Image 1 (spheres, rainbow, N blue to C red):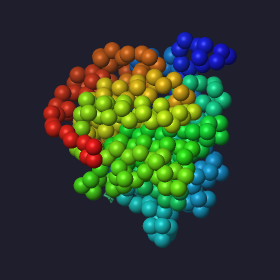
Image 2 (cartoon, rainbow, N blue to C red):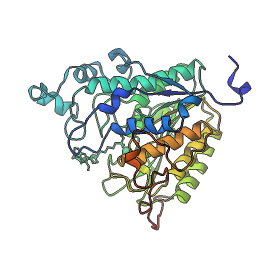
Image 3 (cartoon, protein in one colour):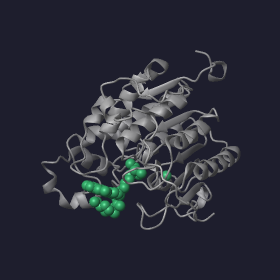
Length: 362
Ligand code: TV7
Ligand code: CA
Ligand code: ZN
């Protein structure tokens, strides 16, 4: 195979397992894995599968998950079921399982699939078998070594970065989910081998409450964690300007060997939990900007709670990574009903509102 720099087009690996779309967190829970199915059907309807390699991820083994998580926590996730959980109230509390992180049918298999996707993506990049690897099911950035947090059980991003560190001296982690990427920051807070940069809403008790600009890393990791706390309503102009100026400076000075980009879509306007005012084009502009550095790139999903918009956003971003612009009219497909009445790729009018946004701490 020709090396990347001698090929004219990037080679893209895309990880998807239809089984994740059937997972159900429970009544009223904002996290809806069905959005992954919707994303995949949009990708197929635009024929994007013809321009990339599609893989079904392996189900990560408990020992692989224990590269970051404690063995007892992994063992508990493996063992617990909705029928037996009433017998384990102490452990449920210890591992922070409950309302935000419920125990549901096939929970462990769900974790194995989304983590397997991010691990496989990192390995394929390491072996230079692709330039960009995508796992929309991944990006669960809140999970901690010994506990679940904020809809996240296993931290696939940390596992993917640990895999990349086997081949790279330095990895840059960028997080545009509306929430602070606390689990990834914490995992690498004391090392200079990973630089973490999170953009997020901060203040008014917004979850998880961390991510002050003054949190910058400690010991060897001092100045290798960057936090960009933002207020409600930030728009495309302010967000992309900030994003580009920070990320270009970081790449220039840190010189990473690979980049991991968490593309949480809850930073879009009209999200059920988020409070930013980004359009899909603004969100995708960040992805386009990161792609231009031509470094091995691992792209994941993350949050995103207005599922029609999540699917639109990640389909557009799959197109951006493939250098393919998608026509605004959504092609006929078996999921088209979700995109009624306009059947368009842009967020329907009324979602993006005009507000004055001001950036905290800058
Ligand atoms: C990456 N916000 C994850 C973001 C995780 C946010 C939270 C909910 C929520 C949970 C529900 C539910 C909800 C409408 C929204 C302090 C609490 C308040 C539980 C009800 N409806 C990501 C996590 C955040 C669960 N958690 O970054 C079941 O909102 O704010 C909190 C914590 C205590 C627990 N309660 C919420 O995007 C993937 N949870 C309905 C049913
Ligand atoms: Ca973030
Ligand atoms: Zn989020």
